Amino acid sequence: MLANDIKSLRPNAEMLNWCTSVANSRMVVLEDGTILSDSATNPNLQNCRLLMKSLNLEIRQIINYDVVFIKNMIDSYQSSIEGKSLYQFTDAQQKIRKIVQDAIAEKATDIHILIRDATAIIKFRVLGDLQVYTTMSANDAIAIVSVAFNRESDHVQKQFSINQIIDAAMVLQIGRQEVRLRLASVPTYPGGKGCDIVMRVLPLRSQAKPIQLEQLGYHQAQLEEFKHVIRKTSGAIFLAGPTGSGKSTTMASLISLLPKNKKIYTAEDPVENLIDGVTQVPVNHEVDYMSFANIVRQFLRLDPDIISIGEIRDSDTAFMALRAAITGHLVISTVHANSATNIIVRLLDLGLSATTLSDPDFLNMLGFQRLIKLLCPHCKVPFSEVNHYTKERERMLQIFGSTDMEKLFVNGNNLGESYHCEYCKNRGTKGLTIVAETLLVDDLVREHIADNQLNRLPSILRAKTGFMTCHQSAAIHILQGNADPFEVESILGPFEIETQF
Image (cartoon, rainbow, N blue to C red):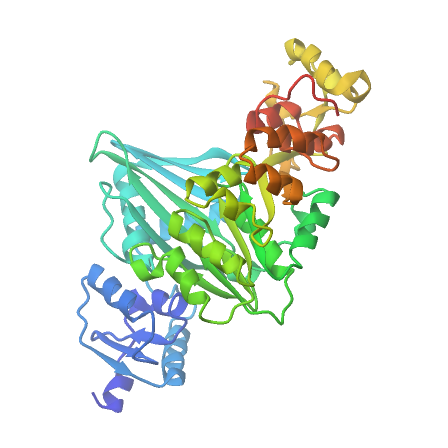
């Protein structure tokens, strides 16, 4: 195709949003099906082909072209339609953008679309709780989700179907905001009639700077422990906690503390928090060589200083983390466990030996965290002034004592009365904070690991000066009047009556 022929063509309007937001204007699809790319090795070429196929667009040819020309062509086309959307969105495309826009306005972390038979409910997760956003017909919801997976996604592997498990990611341009979302779907019983779709709202690229560690909620002694181990040049830091407990945020905050003259690699599924100066690699479980273990194996050939692994899920990844940590690299990762000490149990389950885990060159620190709600300072209610918890008053008295009982506040929204607060939109809470237990792995801990005395370790640690359980961490917030003890118990489980605060 001659240069003049190319210049006479216009960009394909249906692909333009993808080319600008995902391919970063390094590629453009023309109206005749020609793809102009700045390089034959552009990593987005395959996804471009798959997306065009899903839209039933013919792929005529692929031509390497100057990136400046490509960007100018896109800019000129956008200027010609100034005042309009990048292309004429379908009704479903407009709806998905409206839903995402409203979710961001509500500071939601996730969008849940629950399709059942003829109806669908859309919910937002705000401050840890699901709240109903709207309802619609199942057909409308399926149309919206199909657009998200088939047209907007930058990871098109197959057409959306409510009968299949599908994962994807997408970037939406909403006004002047660029929004990243991770999508996942699963069919529900009975088959063929429904499914659940969750869209995780990831940080905007313009707001991707990691939160400072001091802002997450760790207490001062715990912060000092983190700052101590993050200065080490080898060994491993493992974090645990359920999904949605803020582990990725903590890892990003820790990485942001590392010296800028160090080579830092991360393997993530997916990349959530964008960090300046860090090489971040997304895991792709559909391709064997892009698994956690294989990516870490490749990192070790690239002269790294620090390696962050999104999650230790299998034996291969556990052994690669071990290999990296004991060969002069600092490793930061997460493990699914329900306490700091149970991280050791999980690593044993994954095949690491007690001898390995007690090696002084391996484990530096273990942490476990959960998120609790912080009370709205404008509408929190003194515990002493409510009769709603009459049956619980004696138990709280035994836990906190008569003096500290005067410091307790509760969420007025849970009292079953008409409730209005303009500051928190009637939620009674203003945000979330981390409650955690952190464990520096010292000789005492290693001795119990080596002697297979893990069952004794929690009680020994509780008696150890400075060690704090999640309940003790939460109690500090409660006694400061910043957390509702009953909401805390709904997250962490009941306080032990014999516990003294």
